[in-house]
Image (cartoon, rainbow, N blue to C red):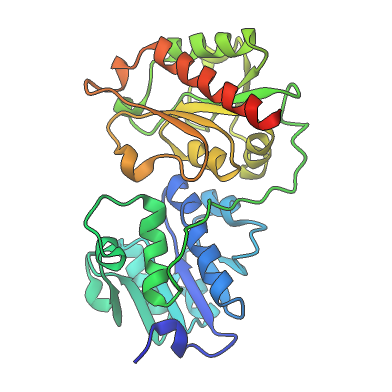
Length: 311
């Protein structure tokens, strides 16, 4: 038999389960774009946690957004469910979906619940190398039957004017927080970069989440605990992004904003900004070993590139 997508009649429903991680959600959107470009007749629902729902809102590649509950997935009555998460809750939803085709990566725990198992991305691409997260997600679509081709940039949509979120026409977004200490560059170094940006004519705007302590950055504008719609709007209007490896860096990349990202314990091959002008900063001794001068040099390089494009 041919690929699974060839077996789905027009108008079939697909439920894509995408739990956890802002970055994972953003980097799932290229895969959704590939799927819809190949089969625009399919109805695609994304099963997503409420805190990340805004990533997919207004995206034409997602026809429906479902809450991550077994009854919600079952009520959608999908013909095919694609589990991109693999954890226990997503497995329960996969089983409860009642879908004829239950699909997920073969390396997932409890993958015996799948009726079809996706092989490793390296097998799909036919080359043994580290793959980016966007490639990993897209490989599932290629295995399902989407013709192999370029993987597009992540797709986020904003319909909210950026003016309310930005303090000036030319501004840079700085995200100095991360999920772990070994992924977080010292606050005083971000402050030094922010002052350099201000002196260079780009007004810094710091971005902080609900659990982040932004007290150290109050000298500058700080956008705290903003809804996703406002964060997307802020990013869409920015000239530059600087921050730790975390979800906001992927939001910036989705809008094609030049980004400078500082990496600690995470792998830049897997998590580097996808399809945008970028500078990735690393150090063998860890993120604390990255110097302010290195970050400023990266910012200057990206600013020059930006001026060339604008000229």
